[in-house]
Picture 1 (cartoon, helix red, strand yellow):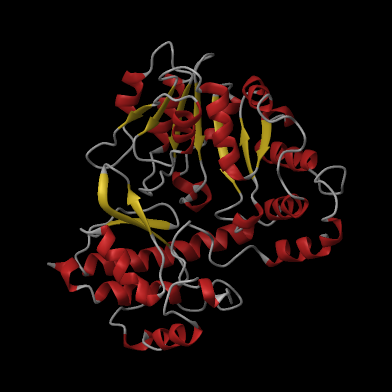
Picture 2: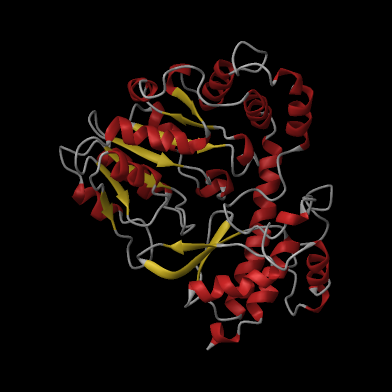
Length: 386
């Protein structure tokens, strides 16, 4: 991190204040669920990077070992190998109980979200999105087609407004985009509500795209079974990524599953050359799919640290939204001032609420050590508590 006035020595000095922080560690913390002590990252230059919602612990050791073992193949394109793009698609299809022609890969989920624009967004209001969400598809449509997509404001509780979205759908609607859990709010739709919505809205001419970038971080008992909707032939497109729970953000691997005709339509925008995925990315993704125990461990660890943050924000009287992800959206009254006062601690965060919620910021859930530094800084902002 290139924050002025911050270096390794200062970080260690700040770290020395941990014992003085008047913040109680939750009872759930005892022996770490990670065998290496939990705070594995050694890149202290970026140790207070509380944005982008990355997995701060990195990928599993199995993934690291597999990538290292195959580093002699980086001079080759990501096809025709023991680990190649076709085999990755086949692995995903087998795990989800669908056909291989129902899977498409992307350079992270970002590329797929851009594909949606080109495939569905050529007419005015042919795409409907929440007004506050991960709006890559809408923003890209506005730019390349020079017209506005239809944005539906969140409810007063800051939930995606499914009723208003249903009312907005017309014969001209080609795509409805839903991010669940939603970014930046962290809130999730109930399984029953999302399932009912998809059955109501999806049709031969209207695809419901469900961005599940954070689905692995939800409580498994509360996750909607969107794949079952696909197996039942509803026109849904489920978009997922290896960037978050799997810790592979730097390798850029994502995928989507849908009806074969929807995937074929996206392939038309894809040029079918194995995509933009790297050879190490394919190796990492395939190995990660075989190591779901690591994802479960990270989900539990993240939930513990997230609960720790929420408990302390509540004690300080700071408004926040309960999250199902690895980030929290909080109301800091003056987001510009808040971000400025975090800089001396070497912290970088981003605004979170957009035009609808200008005083809100989004905080990524880092390691416990990182979060303690963050909370110590917030605790010193007396103006927040007035």
